[in-house]
Length: 337
Image (cartoon, rainbow, N blue to C red; front, side, top):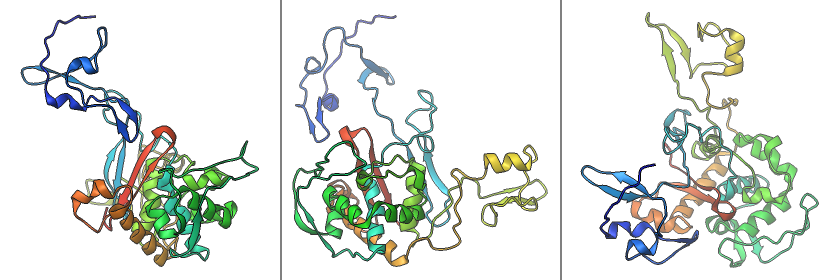
């Protein structure tokens, strides 16, 4: 271990080093190193051109996937912040709870079963006795407030937990499961209790981006892929995503290093198991209503303050936060991304 003796000069650039009290509250802005460092602390230094500066190794990881919602083509794919630190692919191999980012699919199920965005549900304290839960459940809203009778549209924009739970209870778990399958979610992995309404299910970012693509793509689901087509040196197309049939067709596809059975098992042409996408999976009108509501969320919801600098009205999205901020999500889209 090397021990260095360094003289550090304070700068306002270090004001980011504030104590985190909660997700919404940070400690006082430091005025010097002594406000957040103690003798014996290990510190991380970043090498700049001709000097070292105090840096921070994030305790959190992040991932991102962006696709063309119409074709399913991958536009951007980031599995983590630094491959050298961790080569774990968080886009396809991590399955965090989805939190409130799952709510649009519950609301879509409600609209498909006779509700509309003007339907009022009373947002008031309630205790749920659910046979699938170990004890009585007293859910609360993120803000700690209750809004009384509120429309489904406003409830989704404000991300009101109680309304989502009541809506799911009125719909029924089984009926909702059947509808949620349309977005590509596996029924066997969907929670079988009312916590489903708050996003207690565990899904990868690639599963969530596929589900949101249904809303962005007017009700059609996309099969996500990196490879559009492969052309051999003679100009012959040996693989075409556009015309590919999931029932292996040796006239269309030829991976000479794999036999047919290996192709079926490994599916080198898909990032996630394909779904029949030849027909619309949800009503176009429902997709439109969800898109419009999620545009409202970007303007007036939790994301409104942070997205206002974009000065755009064509972006829709939803945030999601699980207990103690173990996972935080943002799922957003417009028509081509």
